[in-house]
Image (cartoon, rainbow, N blue to C red; front, side, top):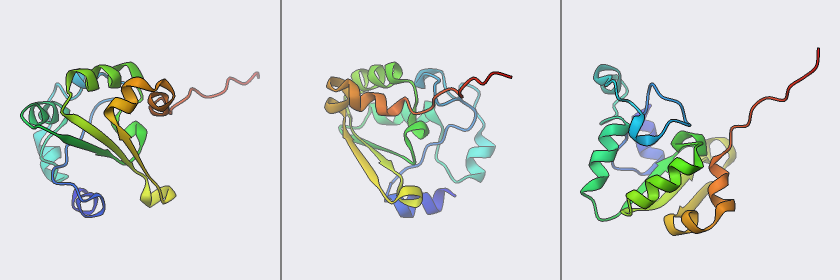
Length: 130
């Protein structure tokens, strides 16, 4: 899976969050490491590894397969971008499903609430009366 993702998205490193919700804050994800599963998926690490990795980089572009693949928590995304100013771009690669790529600049997300809310993409089901 990761090999195909690496080819399609032209990324250098793949980090996966295998046991967390899309709404979980980044710093609380993957606190229980599952190294064996990550190795089987050919990922180089989980969210905690990604957070450590980007600290030492001058510029980082994050790529996810959909908005929820990164986060659905807009407050957490805003906080993440403020704390990790080296995260310059976010790309949502939806080529496989809808033939589109969505590019975000981190300053755009920090200053445009409408763009930021595109990550709040999972809505609760409609309640039906019985």
